[in-house]
Image (cartoon, rainbow, N blue to C red; front, side, top):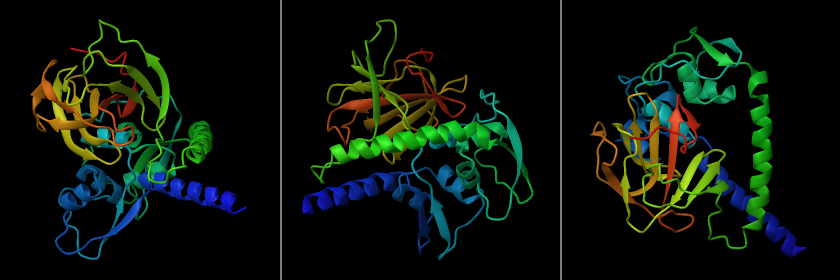
Length: 305
């Protein structure tokens, strides 16, 4: 009986740890705080912090003000880091009109309607610095369109609980919530950020590929473009976003040292930095993702050079 209760407590504790990675947080502004310092503290971007609280570039935060710290979602970070968020979404889904009310934010509206901020930005041709106003009309997807994805989400949650219950024999070990797919054989014609990697597909909240690497191996650019973001991002370690001329975002995550800076223009083969150590597997590896209009696409098929 005691053993069963202990196992149940361990599962609940582990679920709380995992959920905290993806749960919103309320933060009260203290003396000396800035949007930049708060974003660094919670390992998110300033753009995400503004979007979650409907703040413009000119808004000043005040002591005692409560801010929403959004949950970790790298697709949102990608969308908000991009300068090209005005393309029409590829999704052929029916839309309805939504009227902005007092207290609304892009982040809140997206969450409430089963969308991502990236979807909302693209659908309404908004820039990441735009501030919505009370009475403004926005397009959102009909609830019926996202019902199937909500069912899938619940299924994934159930699977996560099972995985956690099986991996909680050691409380000091953080459970790996990533969903791994097939292992792909590297094609000699396809350029990867590291040499001769074992390529494992990753599905779910993080969608891309995981690349095996040697300790401190050099990470090289696979598609020329502009560096949009460099920094630590919650749950992904040191990350680097490169936006191509066609608007695709190439995300190199789990890096060690980074040798380029935001706004740098890099070409294929440019040394971006080195591979870091994955905090969960404790192995040198890189997670590589590619986004189009804020949505992940297959990195294997993404354009190179």
